[in-house]
Length: 162
Image (cartoon, rainbow, N blue to C red; front, side, top):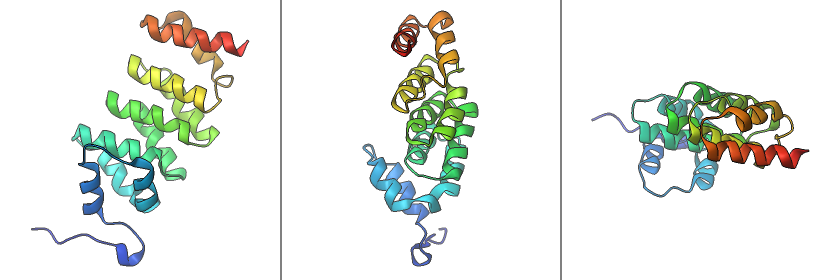
């Protein structure tokens, strides 16, 4: 058996404890973000890129609740390269970022072909008050996206911006 990894004495986090948290069914992401913090980001980045999609998705959601440039970069990368659930988590996490990071994530998410990703990206753009900044992308979705519901949401956002 592998030796127990712990860095609590050094002010870090316990990877085994983080894995146990992520394997639960119902998660309190804000509390976990506060508990594990930025020290967990390198480990979470590994998990986001792992082949265990459920664990990767939960790790991506948790990254969204942790502040900092490293978290911004993980979400931006996840928005471009992850599976659909991971890209959804990145789009959702954008609403918790600063405006520059949120904009970078949402630019990718609003160009996604998955209706789920675009739906969360539109919600995050609205929550982040970045609709005007991303207006051209939202307008394009309102006119040419394949999913009519998503087109309608984007169209409503455009109408409210005028």
